[in-house]
Image (cartoon, rainbow, N blue to C red; front, side):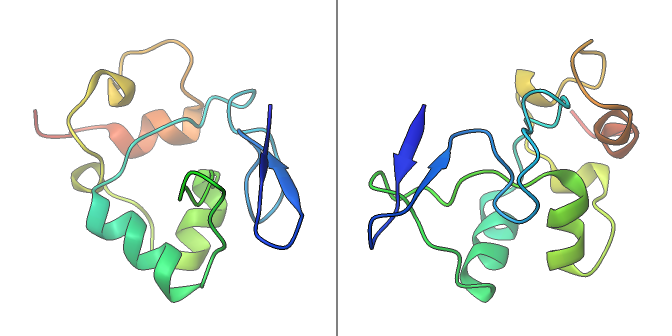
Length: 101
C-alpha cells in the first residue's frame, strides 16, 4: 500500500523514510514514546502523508537522526514492543532488553 505525500509523491507504508528498507521485512516495527518520535519528525521536518503520519524509520536511521542509541526506556509499553516476540530484528530485540513494564 502506498501513501500520498503533499506535492504528489508517495511512499510505501513500511519503507524507512530515510534509507528505504522495508521495516516490516527486517522486523523493525516498533513504538516509541510520542514526544521522542515527534521531536525527531519535527526537527528533521519530515513530510506527513494524507493521514498526518510521518511514516516509518528503521532503528539505524532513527538513531542517526536522534543522535544517540535508543534505550529500553524510549519504547512504549505495548505488545508491539514485547522483547520476546519472534519477529523483531536482533537490533530491535537488543534495544528492548530490560524495558520496564
